[in-house]
Image (cartoon, rainbow, N blue to C red; front, side, top):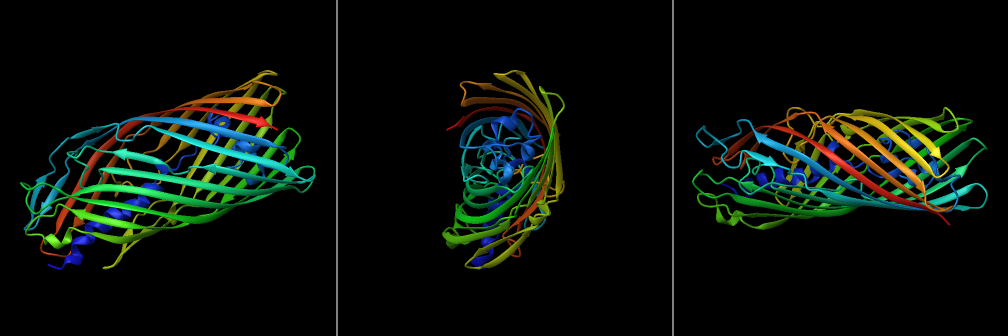
Length: 429
């Protein structure tokens, strides 16, 4: 048995490094507290620094402004086993034993974001924003039925966006951005030994890297109607790190328990957004927004170690999300909001992993803005996220192509709901 074959399981775990950063459930659209209150239904057509993530043209006529927001997210979910198995050499198939249901595997999180913008002359404005568009942690117990697919998944990203926007005419604004994005991931999973009586081994992976993207956008201000459109580029990610394998017992070679350098490459989706805001009256504004997200870019992951290159198919699909909402100026000091959004998952029904316990979702939101002073505004948003029940259906091979090959067949159900509380501050200076 060649030692290099034993790192096939490590390569599968390395594939999850990208999957963790790419699944629909792991893209965090919570980039605006004001937007959270209306289910992100009008951000591409709204003005000001709070909409900078959604449209680089948003700051063309906002003046000197700063924004800071914080979003707390809790997901109350469960992942249950419905007949997962291990197939050992010789064709012996046994059920995966251990904890049959994992409760709240998605850890609560706090997501901050901030932005600042300033005019430069009469028609030009520049802005800088810092956000975390992919930022998530899932944890399963060491005895969970998911352990051969996922134990701990910890992803942190920081996206720095530099923007320039210009008032081309009295009604047309255009903008462009350059993005630098850093990803840092820590993942672990269990490896089966060749007997169900032996304890599990383990694989741990760590990786990080900086990557680059861009965005363009425009807004048309037509009286009571504002139209907005933007396009965010795909980003080709290259993460470098290491894979550590431990706990493999004879007859597997002891030399396989070691740490090796590894890298993973994958592509995040492009995002095309189209939206509108219409002031039906001086008090009531209607909002609508549609996004086409090019998840088809995430079709495969390239994993490389010293032993070679492995291509792992992902087969994600492009999706279209949509939302509608309202803003109501109750009085000069208080604006109320509400909205609803539909957000389908890009993950395939066959091949969905416990690292990405995702499903189609509806988001229902309410929010408000209070004018604290003439120059300072306090935003708040509250949302409930309803996840459609989905299934985990994934097969993988450990020590593939050798006499020691063990196949895992995961079958399970995912259900749950999410709760979001957002608070932010905007100030002119």
